[in-house]
Length: 339
Length: 160
Image (cartoon, rainbow over all chains, first blue to last red; front, side, top):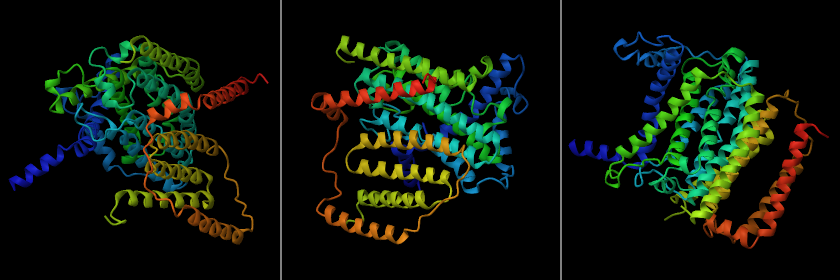
């Protein structure tokens, strides 16, 4: 019995199981979702001089309010309207959440602890994040509802605006460090973090991350005051939980990538602490969590852009800045002879 | 190791089956939105085939350009249109015949080649090859893309 237990524990700590299932995979995603939605409501409440969620477990400021909300969502009857396209309507939330979660398998936790290492891992990660918007557009069509369709199309417009500059900003860091391998990129930032070497790429990537995940001021595809909940309007119960969770998961994944590309990943931990994956993992998670918290804080302080303003920002500001970022990287590489 | 227990062979069979089924559905599904979705499935299948051939970088670009970008654009356009009634030209027998002939020809032509990757394409080698040996083609391609970009901006600004 003891042998079996120790075997199961050792199996759990193998990178190919630990990373997709525990960190940065499902378990941490689940806890992070519950925490971040509570934090979002709490921060917005503080800014607007309210209490926010408070009554479920008062001593800790209502922190398990989101657990109660989740239980409500789980046991709510999922309503499927008669006019929707049933297969697409039911399949898209699952695909959307699955594709938002999929890139976590590529993310390394420490220099020696990763499920998958390739000299193209950054490119693979960026590619996997481009697949999810297909399902938001499909969701808008399948719901057979004007608000949903407009929400889906707005998502399409945003994709056109953010995808290319985001790729360019991320790849400018690959140019700077001469590698597309996330482990190499994080290891190269032992001294100076990428954000300080190439701040233009850092700032444009951060703005584009919030744009791609529909956070304020770019919460255009699901603008409540205009189009109810955008592509998610017709969803209820656990399916609504899945589609709402997907955008937070995408924010989490992109924040982890940002932490690796610009904030040094698991650095500045000393090499002696790298043997156990928990400490570097905690460092990486802390950095990503701060970025997510900034993202949800923006909800409280910014108004929403119109779709044409968001497209202008994407094409007229982010694209030139990301091209500039590539030139800055090339300049640094030319001067220093490679990082 | 037998042919069936080789994971590469299994992945090849699964992805090629996925590609063929997706291609059939693209043509035969009555809804164009579903056809666009199956186009993305075809793209995924083809990307896996490229990766199996030893070209992971082409596979990733295929995935991001033909699935991530192109299918989003197609879905984006067709979702706004009304479903058009499909018109089927009465040439089914001819189509089946041409598929059979093409299959036979492909089997004859391709049978001496194996499915094993002949070499692994490293992106560093690829880029150095592009800028040293094929630099002129690269410049021409860049200029063509630049012209397309300028054209797109001109149309978007409605100055013509």
